[in-house]
Length: 112
Image: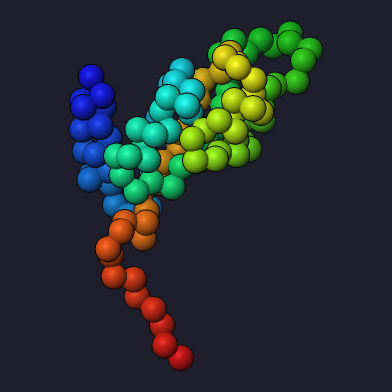
């Protein structure tokens, strides 16, 4: 199953231009999704969250403001620390293709 997920992520990455964006909306927490995204390709990843059950009459503020990315550490545990264990949210992974992150690429440098 994981092989198919990685294959799809690699295909998505391949067809995007440099700085192109892939958006993944899922129930999967960073502890389970982040390593797949990072292992598959050279993405710059930002995480946003939106509550699953948004109610107009809700008096409580949202768990996290949608427009603010959730800070991420290497394994994604920082999101759980901020949002709590099993928050009732959709995770929105905004993955930008970044060719400068690929190992072994020659980077142009300017000489003054």
